[in-house]
Length: 459
Image (tube, rainbow, N blue to C red; front, side):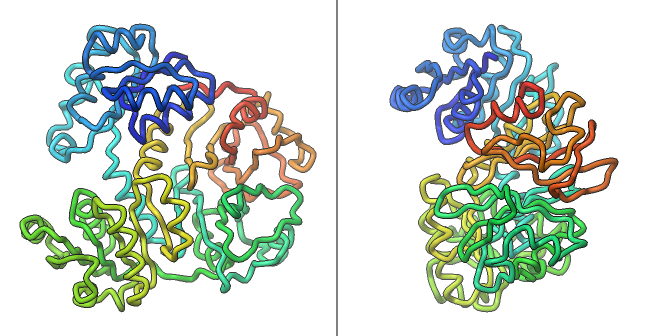
């Protein structure tokens, strides 16, 4: 498949790496020759240097023959114009654009988008996606990652094994007898930067493991308790940073967390006054989130969750660590630099939010098609969790999973059948039409294609 990506930043590069691994014909346009050189050196992609909204650059990239355009440059305007030109001149079937400015995202102007006006098929708002991700974590503060599966009927949850985890050292096969009525399946274990997929049931979790499990959403509280996490939904939140993300998160809390007290620490006095005028039930403190006196004024020493979402990674990391030392029960830090993500958790921050990874996930959710219903990249970009429909021709259907030839690097995490959630066991038999939750390690897409008997195509 021919795909053109506008922008070779963190998001564009990550999307290009994912799609090129799946043997697509990918071309990336970027104004920086250095970015293009770096990308073409590392991945099997073509590169074009130039402004991504210029018709001649799009033509050179082959957009006339492309089936998909993904516009993720740093400029909303370039992204929108690239979609318009691709549609008007080159008839590109599907256009996806990242748009960040809240002025363009105001619901009052929703009629702007569509084939009759700006022909953008899917709009990705990183700030909105990040805000939604943090909101999920406020509901499950003991987790470092929470995603909804199957329209909310199931959850994919990442938890850290601490000294309080009663399951440490217990072979996974024994979890069924310990929790017989719990619809939960351990999907993957991340240990020392590597992924361990439970296969024999003899695997045991260790202190410091980052564990991903899938469970019935109705069993989420019990599943968290089985890992020693019994934290309630956050009732007090302090947010460091009153930018777009801090604003959206505060509005989410005001709208959907009726018993939660929320405060924002904002360094810029002008922005702090704006926040005070726009937010009705949020306390605004003008000050530095790295100032211990300001943290004390905000009551961080007694707060349940501290969320650092400033535009500076270092401020986010350091303020989250300071909040934990001050007494906050749970700390979340937004980190843009991918190389920092795997390190921050080891420092004591409970959860790390990476906007580029969340944006990549959102784009992949929009571009997959056919029997693949949803895609969820996991932390550190070590793999993906897919929601897939089981076809009659699939190698998974009609036999107990213990006898199915599931390839290395692939694990089955759960089944949705006729609206009912089923945990996966060795004697589980998948039926045609089931929605199956599958974890696939990075670079193992071909094995999943064979297993499902379906090409992982797009849109």
